[in-house]
Image: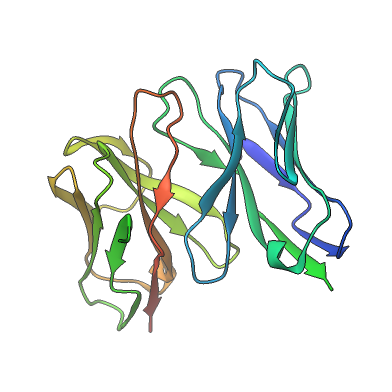
Length: 112
Length: 114
């Protein structure tokens, strides 16, 4: 049972465009929603995270939008750059905090 | 200084062999993990140790045995390797008590079972 569903599986965006990746979760006990970025041959690295008490969090060109009632959250990458080409994972965890459940990943390619 | 280091980076072996992957973190974290990433990039937690004690053991064949000699190390031993074990294995660490602690991942061990 996949508790965090991520879409799309792959995404191609032109340089300067907006990349949008969506995630939906089922477990209402989840209270921490991070996004991880993974480059080929590397481990995932935390990009940005949000808790459900806010609806949006922005760090530079990266923004998380969070809709608690719909149990959905999304990552927006503004002014996408070729260097943003990577696999992005959404994730969620509950109060215990020790078990992140990952979405299936989105391979983003930003074309120059 | 690498925060979470795992060795080896690549591991190619025959079916039926036994192999180990080592992991060390120098972040002072109290919790360490093993994740498996399959060919479709799906990340799934295998084990979690907090202060050397096993706290998460997902549905993983008992051929996989984690060992934590101290809270800075978490090794993974795999007996009787099978073709389906081929994947990238990631070690990670975090500091609990912060509600969904930030995970720091190692760079992975690509295991190929022939």
